[in-house]
Length: 553
Image (cartoon, rainbow, N blue to C red; front, side, top):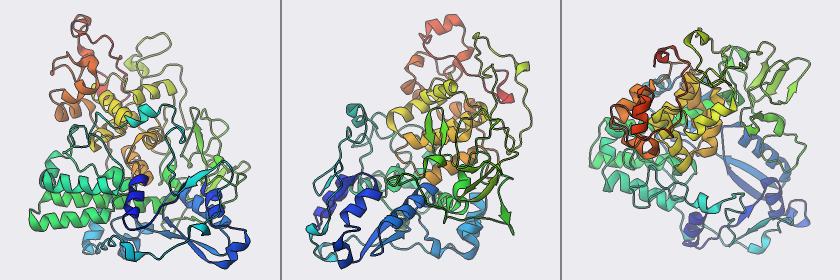
């Protein structure tokens, strides 16, 4: 992405300075903050406005160190609709808890206009500048007009493996065989998919497919990286409707752009509460006059001056890794290990979304000897009588937290073919179809009963198209923590419906390559003799679902 931006700027006579380091150190050094030269000019630093706490806090800290002569200006550019153009009933602070309600509100107001994208700059768009006006980076930091960090410098241990990341998945039958970063590749993909392949007109009928480059636009990685504006996509859809066809496929594509907007505005509304274990509507959160007490102007004090993002105390440590789950309070009687910036005397947490009272939040996680997933220390299957389902309240859910079983989900070793194929594709390529994402998320949350944030955190670390608001809000919906219907998927039905011949499963689960199509969706029902005949002994044993409907399988 950066290299493509540099090349495009060079075509209009501009250069791009790239540095690797904390913005709290790099920008003050380049702008000569605190030096005599600083008083000779005023500077404006532009940054993309973001809805989530890490970025908000990072920018607040940066504004403090830039000095009086430098202004930090946030530019909102994430969404199809600009917040200033939304009707009063559709503003972020009044967002309903379901997308359909928000969409209907928008339609009742005759949908606000979408702003036209700015035209691309040319050589006459910029004035000349003096390179010598930039200061020097601190010792140990790299940067320059010809500099671009390599993968090893960025911390990757096996660069060759990372360079292969993305092959063999959703884009393998495309011209480039994988996702290529940058605006140039994004516009090429948009034109090729929509016009050359003429896929938009049939998008509604193919959107749930699992394999192939053409079933969906695959534009999300470029949109999430800022290489492609949702507005550019929108106006290209409108041009397609005028010149070729307008049908439910083109309307559904616009619908997907609006859903992306909805999640971004939901993140604006709820702030840090979006990462609370029991969801943004948790009964412990503070509301006034029907609205959430919300304050993004939180303290930016930090013991580490170079910590650009949230302080360590705003993270919760999950199984040895720091996860962006700021809403969780680790109480003294909880089996969950973590630390929060909290008031120990009152049992409360002061955050962006207001004050949390966690005195009653002691039932965070369950800790049993038996794993309830079909395996205990003696390798005996737990009986149905040992797994007693009960009616759950979203504020009192008992979430699982066993790392070894979560690892099986991550690695695609659950014994459920459709889930395993999807998780293996994610690990190899960094991409999953929307249908596959919904399936694996529902399986982790609804069948295995794991804390939804474990899955959201893993997606954040793996997805090429990761967007914080869209990722976490989708997981909240799967966990039924944003209102609306229960988003539980019957995995066997999904497998039969969307991979009837088992082609997708065989591709990612070679252990099952010899299993007949009628058995590949439920290989655990095969006899030991058949398993040996099909050479599938290496395929992992099935993890038992904790959902009552699967008890007899």
